Length: 85
Image (cartoon, rainbow, N blue to C red; front, top):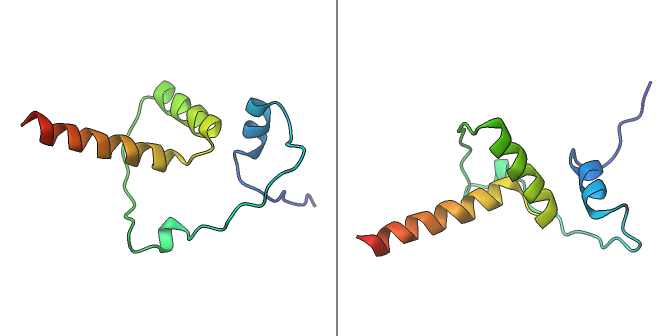
Protein backbone atom coordinates (compact mmCIF):
# COMPACT_ATOMS: atom_id res chain seq x y z
CA UNK A 1 0.00 0.00 0.00
CA UNK A 2 1.29 3.47 -0.90
CA UNK A 3 1.26 6.19 1.71
CA UNK A 4 -0.39 9.41 0.54
CA UNK A 5 1.89 12.47 0.60
CA UNK A 6 1.09 15.43 2.79
CA UNK A 7 0.46 18.71 0.99
CA UNK A 8 -1.77 19.83 -1.80
CA UNK A 9 -2.04 18.87 -5.44
CA UNK A 10 0.11 21.80 -6.61
CA UNK A 11 3.15 21.23 -4.36
CA UNK A 12 5.17 19.37 -7.01
CA UNK A 13 4.21 21.92 -9.66
CA UNK A 14 5.10 24.79 -7.35
CA UNK A 15 8.53 23.33 -6.60
CA UNK A 16 9.18 22.81 -10.30
CA UNK A 17 8.24 26.40 -11.15
CA UNK A 18 10.23 27.88 -8.26
CA UNK A 19 13.28 25.73 -8.91
CA UNK A 20 13.12 23.19 -6.08
CA UNK A 21 12.35 23.05 -2.40
CA UNK A 22 12.93 26.13 -0.30
CA UNK A 23 15.91 26.11 2.06
CA UNK A 24 13.92 27.42 5.03
CA UNK A 25 10.21 26.86 4.45
CA UNK A 26 8.06 29.19 6.55
CA UNK A 27 5.05 27.72 8.32
CA UNK A 28 1.88 28.91 6.66
CA UNK A 29 -1.06 30.13 8.68
CA UNK A 30 -4.13 27.93 8.50
CA UNK A 31 -7.01 29.47 6.61
CA UNK A 32 -10.64 28.63 7.17
CA UNK A 33 -11.87 26.42 4.36
CA UNK A 34 -13.98 28.46 1.96
CA UNK A 35 -16.53 25.65 1.84
CA UNK A 36 -17.15 26.18 5.56
CA UNK A 37 -17.10 29.98 5.41
CA UNK A 38 -20.54 31.63 5.13
CA UNK A 39 -18.93 34.62 3.38
CA UNK A 40 -18.22 32.48 0.29
CA UNK A 41 -20.42 30.77 -2.28
CA UNK A 42 -19.39 28.01 -4.64
CA UNK A 43 -19.91 28.61 -8.33
CA UNK A 44 -19.13 26.82 -11.57
CA UNK A 45 -18.10 28.35 -14.87
CA UNK A 46 -16.33 27.13 -17.97
CA UNK A 47 -12.97 28.30 -19.29
CA UNK A 48 -11.10 27.20 -22.38
CA UNK A 49 -8.50 24.56 -21.43
CA UNK A 50 -5.53 26.74 -22.35
CA UNK A 51 -6.83 29.69 -20.31
CA UNK A 52 -7.44 27.41 -17.32
CA UNK A 53 -3.89 26.06 -17.59
CA UNK A 54 -2.46 29.59 -17.77
CA UNK A 55 -4.52 30.63 -14.74
CA UNK A 56 -3.34 27.60 -12.79
CA UNK A 57 0.32 28.31 -13.61
CA UNK A 58 -0.09 31.99 -12.70
CA UNK A 59 -1.68 31.02 -9.39
CA UNK A 60 1.27 28.77 -8.57
CA UNK A 61 3.73 31.46 -9.65
CA UNK A 62 1.98 34.08 -7.48
CA UNK A 63 1.39 31.63 -4.60
CA UNK A 64 -2.34 32.42 -4.73
CA UNK A 65 -5.46 30.36 -5.15
CA UNK A 66 -7.14 30.52 -8.54
CA UNK A 67 -10.37 31.66 -6.87
CA UNK A 68 -8.48 34.55 -5.26
CA UNK A 69 -7.24 35.73 -8.66
CA UNK A 70 -10.68 35.36 -10.26
CA UNK A 71 -12.36 37.23 -7.38
CA UNK A 72 -9.86 40.09 -7.72
CA UNK A 73 -10.41 40.36 -11.47
CA UNK A 74 -14.22 40.22 -11.18
CA UNK A 75 -14.09 42.92 -8.50
CA UNK A 76 -11.96 45.16 -10.76
CA UNK A 77 -14.30 44.57 -13.70
CA UNK A 78 -17.42 45.41 -11.68
CA UNK A 79 -15.78 48.61 -10.37
CA UNK A 80 -14.78 49.62 -13.91
CA UNK A 81 -18.42 49.24 -15.02
CA UNK A 82 -19.53 51.71 -12.35
CA UNK A 83 -17.01 54.30 -13.49
CA UNK A 84 -17.99 53.84 -17.19
CA UNK A 85 -21.68 54.55 -16.60
